[in-house]
Image 1 (cartoon, rainbow, N blue to C red):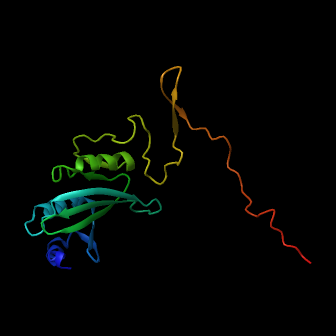
Image 2 (cartoon, helix red, strand yellow):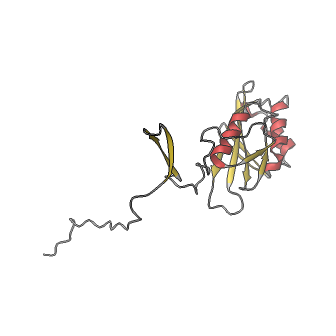
Image 3 (tube, helix red, strand yellow):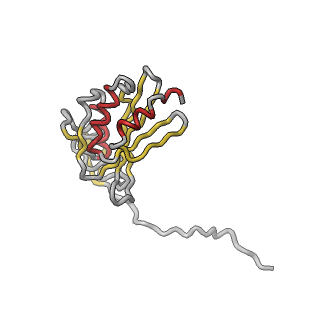
Length: 191
């Protein structure tokens, strides 16, 4: 654990913002007590001379549909090339929560936040260009949410006569069927 020489230092300074800390080998994850402290912690981790976690590798989101108080877990993966260490900063948010954008801290978070907005519908306040990045502009819904239907709401096909894409509502050809999983060919013979 020599790459985590800064761990005790980190604990002493950020303990008022932390809810949970997980250490598994070379993996360190800190969970914040509130998403409102996210930019304070990210700014500290990037600019402090002993930590130098100055590269934002990725922003990932996980949807926990069955959780009542908080639904989404937002993860920020940071990297320090000078110390050869990684850190995961995570926080829980609800559907209605508005997260402060970190584009002023990490300029590379621009497209990552747009992707989270497009796939999960998490709004980032003070983002300069928050618009869809992977789906169409008229797309309704957020496809990575667990309550989004697997077949979607519309199907797209190319119409040769009109020579453009046609959006049509999804029509299922059959209703839900009950399946009897007993094999009719497997019978118990009584002798």
